[in-house]
Image (cartoon, rainbow, N blue to C red):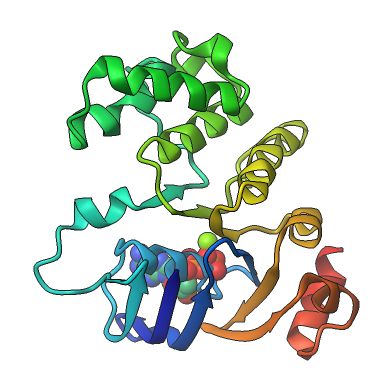
Length: 240
Ligand code: ADP
Ligand code: MG
């Protein structure tokens, strides 16, 4: 479903992705972890072309992501992205946030899109908040709206960049629960997260990055009980 080959990226002199190869199968849930600055965000941002790259190729669902002349909006319709900062539209209600893409990008009728939006908000446990504004929601609720919004275009792939890092601890669980239910339903997911409980219980594979490279890719069982790379061993000692 996702295939990155020999990805190279620089920020000026800083070589932040070094010949990265990365594949994700349909329905697979991959957790990406690693120290701050190792390139995790840059890596997943390349998958929906939020970052220019200087070398390599990326395919998502058969589509060449960096193809010249590609309609980027069309590409992004097929790739849901959830950010650490929820980035909801503050002046729109919860419902309108979720309706925005289907109505304005996909040109669906408001009526048709509303039924789907309600179902999505129900799914993330926020059916009772359709008319609220983001500013009146907790961080956990806002992030769940952001997930519903990302799902509104029914993307076959979802990317998460530290979706719980900006949340108060008591709100982390409700967001992870939604992600877990998506995983259970067979969504293809790449999740940058330091929630090791989620990695252990939900992921099919854990990928560890350091210094712009993937230095370990392992089942969660192996990664948590017998990480192969010394850098991964140290990382786990530090955070667990
Ligand atoms: P992570 O998500 O693992 O913390 P990032 O992908 O954000 O790491 O960053 C990887 C490297 O790229 C770091 O050295 C970081 O300083 C650098 N970097 C990230 N974003 C930018 C940017 N917009 N401009 C310049 N350098 C950046
Ligand atoms: Mg990051």
